[in-house]
Image (cartoon, rainbow, N blue to C red; front, side):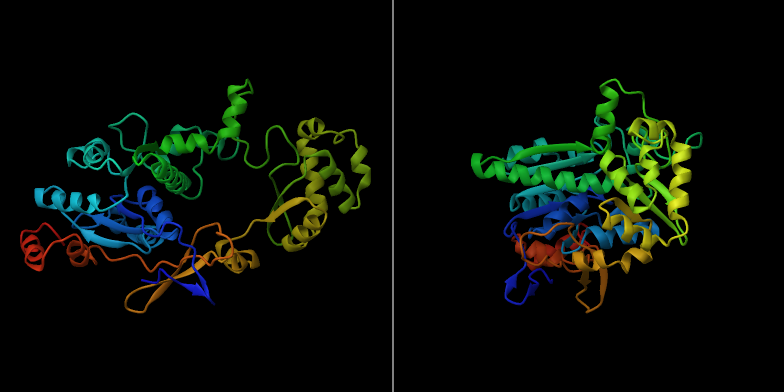
Length: 399
């Protein structure tokens, strides 16, 4: 396991070294939260059913979920419906600092592994549950949270069908916000000596991601609707503009930004144009404004547009495909691309944490484990002898 990658003499950043985590999660949100802790140095054991995380059975994208959100973990396959399997899980939990789960509502409690049951026995434990909705008993995936939080109602073109965001953004955000809650609870435990029960839901995360829009609506603004590109109360803001070889987005709605845009385009007369003199006027005359933007930019390449606008301190970005992003100097300079190595010497590329801790290099966790790959080792560390393990295997409790 390549958990101690170094650059020169600098050790990789591992502030959570010594913290032990049990990951009971499936798909993205739970495993993703545990993955954040792995990348900060924690040791994570992924406890899977005998047939594995459900993501292992939903085709190529499920395989990508496993590779992306389970790097650096060890996997043990346990039948938690059997008393012996639950006893093994509790023994592992008793040796750990954190439990993370996003199982179907009620499943952990039914197995005797819910937060109240476990923390009564291990009060120093930090226990995070990620559900679909606030009210228990209702399953929920990313797409349901996008729909029921209002996010889909504001995503898409006006007058057309609501659209989802192109990736499972709520699941991914829940992973990071869940990890943030765990870190806060671990810090609190250093002061109090007592762990914490943490809970969030995909619905709450989806609402949180729309905080500014919700704040406007709660303050009396009209109910937001789908606008496609652009922002309802600012212009030009989040405008998608065609270029010679693609599209860019730009925002220049602050008055000094609009002035700089006009000067950069050598169209200073637009500064005093009665249609565009203020943000409110530009919003009112958005169709004419968009025609001006197309006239100014459509004969240039996307890169030329971004270079020119950035040089004039105007926010702009090219709309890039994944292949183009992969070749982008910013991605290369970020260090986010990591190589996840398997025990067999093979490897695959993945994305690491989106932040750095000082000058220390990022940890580069190894590849995601196969289901149950570390069962024997993990059980031996928990005090099971070889005879015990083989007995459990013959009984079908472990895989």
